[in-house]
Length: 156
Image (tube, rainbow, N blue to C red):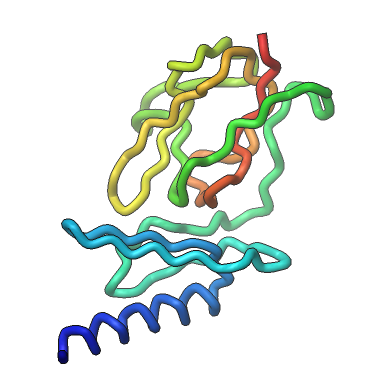
């Protein structure tokens, strides 16, 4: 019974953290256990670092205002590539490597376009579309949200 009370208290703490930091979703996996919490979207989402002893660090807010890297500011019929998870965006496999893609890069559905680190796990993100990269909307090391647009491509 005491273990259930402890688990319930941890869930309540997670809900409070979500509300305080305007987080929409939180998913925690530990062994076979999984907790997924989702709430209605806040009116103005913000990126806020979350640091507790229960959740591994990995979200960091970018310090300066971000402007998208763009070859063409406005083009119609562009396809958006969105983040499939919350985490930290990495444009290249290691600090001394070239980026996976740049503006003008030709991609196929199997092209790895970036890495998103979530809970100390590096997740390779594939394009899932063919075309040419025309906009990169996030910077290396920036925290990203689920569903956030990372790239815009001109389809083939």
